[in-house]
Amino acid sequence: MDLQELTKILNERFPGVLGEENKTAVVIKKESLLEVARFLREDDCAFENLHCVTAVDRRDKMELVYHLYSFKLKFMLTLKIYLASDDLAVETLSGIWKSANWLEREVYDLFGIKFLNHPDMRRILNPEEWTDYPLRKDFDRPDFIRLPQTEGLKAGG
Image (cartoon, rainbow, N blue to C red; front, side, top):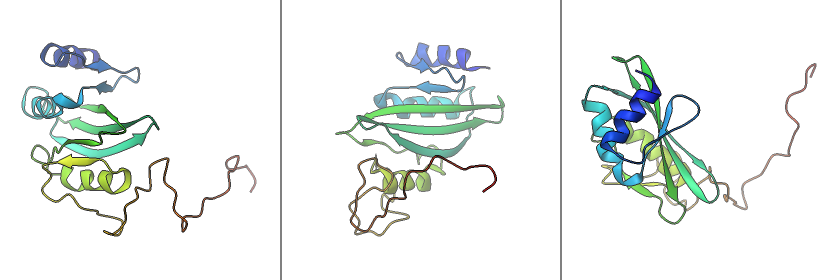
């Protein structure tokens, strides 16, 4: 199975699914996350491994990214959802993949995306009393020291 086939299957059941140019990513609607996740986990696709959940701050929206793997199909899929900046909440996948528990907590702690119905939605890396999310582009604290901009590593030291 390739992304084109998978996108077609997903689109038949969940209209609006888009395949991305990188050959392993699909973008779905926030509202269909639980249904799509159950379908990918339980049906013929058998994506039994969720090994990464992360986010990307696009300034005007947040991109939520799930990396799934199917041993049966020998295929890695990137599942993406775009969240409006004023609505950073989505259903948890911890009931479908146990690994989502800690991974979603990390995304909450670093980006502020809340996972609804999560069994333990609290910070995992930063102090509980923090109200900031350090991987957001608008993160700014008086005790945060930004490194100077560089041109990258240079050969020879």
